[in-house]
Image (cartoon, rainbow, N blue to C red; front, side):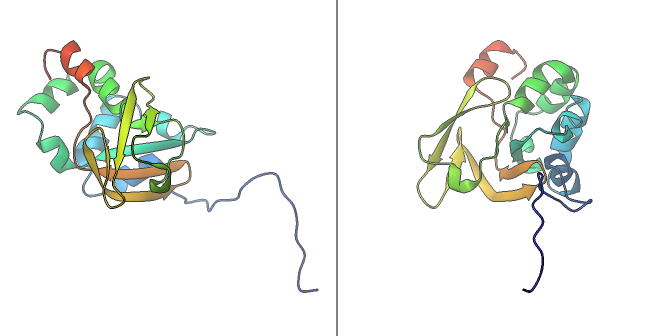
Length: 161
């Protein structure tokens, strides 16, 4: 005998384990995303107990690819258009890169589907390439992407896009 095993009914995590929101806050490449999440008042949602997420996190460079002035225009309606665009980047489940198969479709927290392309080397979601995969958090996983996911429906519904 070299020890004792105690069966418990929960998973233990370190007290300082990051959430999916913390990963964005601590990243030097996600300042625009974090400002948008705070403006849209979604930070608390991304840290809610009992919830798990997969976040496709566009970098600052990805936001810079949007038309000039668009981010500022979106920030004028943070709980509307901006929140909807951000929710298009979040799944209510944990999907690591191994779960993202070619042609797979996932429904975002906005209720719209996104489609995965995976050729075995490169993974993309609605055309946004995953540049860093599997940033694991206490409540999910974050995949860094190189573009902001804006659907055709969103483009048609909002004149500013």
